[in-house]
Length: 238
Length: 143
Image (tube, rainbow over all chains, first blue to last red; front, side, top):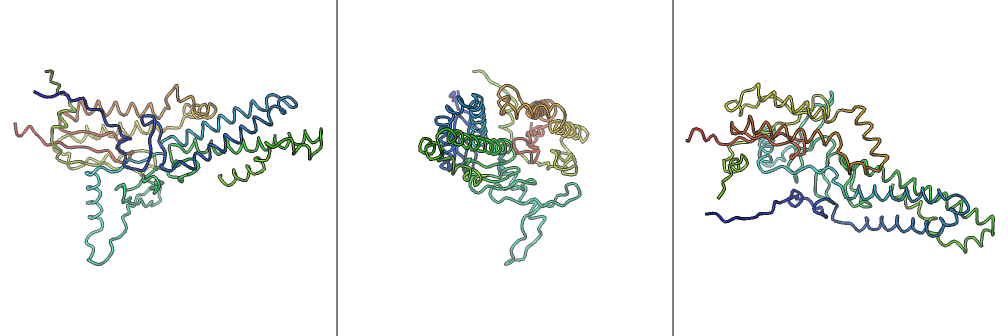
């Protein structure tokens, strides 16, 4: 006689040993420190809402209604790319299971031969020939694997990531093979959005100045002040 | 009380004798290919030709997944223009072929490898680094 046990299947993300946080039943994967990511979100949403609140009504009436429409489309595109980059898996390589780790250790020992006591063992490197070039695959002590070409270990997330670019705190995640395209589209579209808003800020101030004089314009448009500093911040981020 | 003798249950009950790891083959560049050299530990379990045929089919499937053709180009452009929302409705070509590979490995395991006490692990579970072949203890001698 056996008791019927309803055991819930353990998902892979629950067993991942790295320092990631998961949400929405494993659909969202981020690094642990998310503070700077919230700052990025606040800056983008904050400055764009100032633009929509203060500049767009004037520009829509005096210039063209397509100006705020395009700005809204671009804004949603930027937010979509940011969230996609932040929430997706950068290309984390699973760590070696115990049997594979043991097998690799035995291979390394066989390759190194006997090291006399007192001497440091040689670094664990596997040479592989790719297209007539010798590529050195390094051994990762944490993940216990030989990293494929262009993979690297992120110490913040404690994972080996395939085609690792960098860990971006602004985005709150690593940038690697699987989310590089979203990161690239994010930085590209954000630059476009910055230039677009900055241009129309200038256009707005100029148009008002023509009507009422420059000093009066500055008094009437407090919404433009953040935009003086914003392009510098974007350049820093990129 | 219904008793199910699924292959999975039988595998979990069988003891693992050894594991063989087939590494990546980088001789054609960084394209995903695995070494199809027949490992010596499998000599007693399966014949060489059958194994090499499995490996060759797998390598061909991976080559097909990474193939850059007009279809993948159109897919990429469409995805970029729609802010990748198009992937809520359809799968990428790569994902479709990965599913095909998973099905092929499952089928090969059921038909050829499980009756011989072997199990192929889908390399995607290991980050496309190795193909793990688990060799189970040969029970037929103890019956």
